[in-house]
Each structure stands twice: as structure tokens, then as C-alpha cells.
Image (cartoon, rainbow, N blue to C red; front, side, top):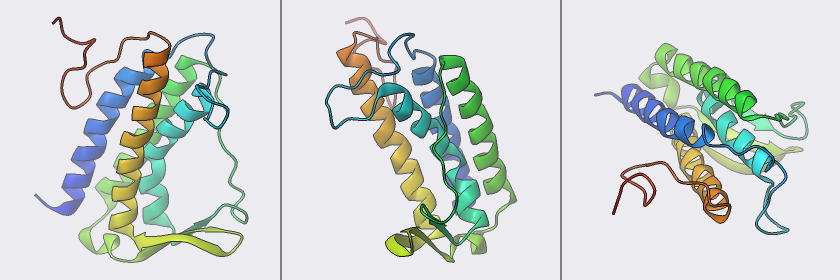
Length: 165
């Protein structure tokens, strides 16, 4: 299996798991945050689904500068909005990987803020980082769900809620 196929397979797996989590997003909890320094639940879930598009951005650009690129966070309001955004962003990320070749993973990709370098990786490493971000933010969302008594779906194996003990 080549690297592109591995990345695509992992993206598809993360999509299926995340779709199960987003399918449980609760009504009336958009503004919930477990701590004053925590993101609110809807912005966290929105960010999580947006990460599925990142392979597309990474493969088509050499950098992302938050201050200069016109970046604006997406604002969503409902579970249905989240599911639509997840499907669209997954499709974009998957298509970008399907159109890529191994050499496309070698150039550097950098995140900046007003010209100040925050991080720089090969495009392969940047895509791997984005896949890690999916896992990280989905786990955060799982904590929010647990604190609100929302049963957790299975991730990489059964959860306490997805099987009977």
C-alpha cells in the first residue's frame, strides 16, 4: 500500500467514526463549555468537521497565514449543518488525496500568523498532523458528551456505552 492510499484509508476511517459522534450532537448545547477556557461545543464540533478538508488545502497551497489569508471560522447552528459540512469537507479532502501522487507529499507546508511561522512540516507531515487533530478534537467532544450524559459511540473499539457489560 502506498502512502497516499494509507492517508486516504485513515481519513475514511476517521470520517466514519466522526459521523457517528456528530450524529449524536445535542440540541440546545451549542454554547456548552466545561470550563471558561474551553471552546463552546458547537465551535469545537465545527472545527472538528472542518479538519477533514485540510488535506485539500495542504496539497494545494504552501502555507496558511491566519492574518493574511482571509481565514474566517465557519459558523454552524445545527447537527444537520454539522453533518452536511462534514460530508462536504470529507469529500474535498478525499478527492485531494485521490488526485495526489507520492511526490506531492514532499514539499514543505507552513502555518503562519501575520508572517510569523507557527509550524512547518512536509505536506505528508501536515496531513498526518491534521489526522491527529481529528482524533484530538473528537476526544474533546467525547468529554463534553460524557459530561452531558450523552452516550459515546465506539471509536477504535467499543465504548462503555456501545456494549452491554
